[in-house]
Length: 343
Image (cartoon, rainbow, N blue to C red; front, side, top):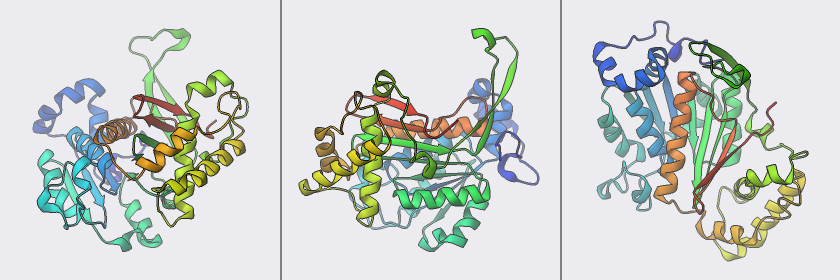
């Protein structure tokens, strides 16, 4: 289902922006238009897991003026959450993350309704279907691949667009499956933008499972290098490592060889140009084993900010969103978008 064609928020009677809201969101309305702001105002977004990247994403989408935010996390606030999770304070340690964060999220924008869920059972199959069906867009952060695939399958069944995002130390990623997404863009036929003329563009996205089968055959050495495939494959390798270790991340020097072997196997299977990436850099693997379990606030801010920006693009349907896998390397400050298994 396209967000452009559906009633915003999937409500029988979409809410209209009031004069007070129009004044509050005046700058945004001037930027992307009243219709786009209206779609955001009527959208209900589910965010799963409240770690560093999620807090930045939530801050931005709430300030932008979505209609309702549903947050899920069954974990308690831990001391390590206080670094990148700016919704948490020292006195919150031991409390449920969602309970500690909810009043501070509400304080950002009282016009946005916030619902907090901490029950693990809601992510079981039938209950997850019901929860996803009740929202307009799903955003899952800092989760294992197998869970991401399961949520992706649920979103496909229910026709809901979704985003995944997270960080591993200095690295971060965003993946989106927007089903068949339609958006309006200026007509640039012939290389020139025609004033006042817009065109509707439709893009079909792949699932995460399909994206992970992406082959790099035909991608030249120059093209592959520009996409920084080492970061792509070390993130995918971390997902595979978690799958083999009941969700655990590598955190011991003894894990270096295993993670390196996983990454190199994935690179070979994907048929990456050997001139561009003959093997995963050993130094990168060693860095991940040392830092993957840690959060760095600046990396969370970049990834969470990018994630929020793209969610708003998808809701507003006024610009092209990501297509479809973004990676960020905090050691260089660079980011790349790889089109994986998309036509």
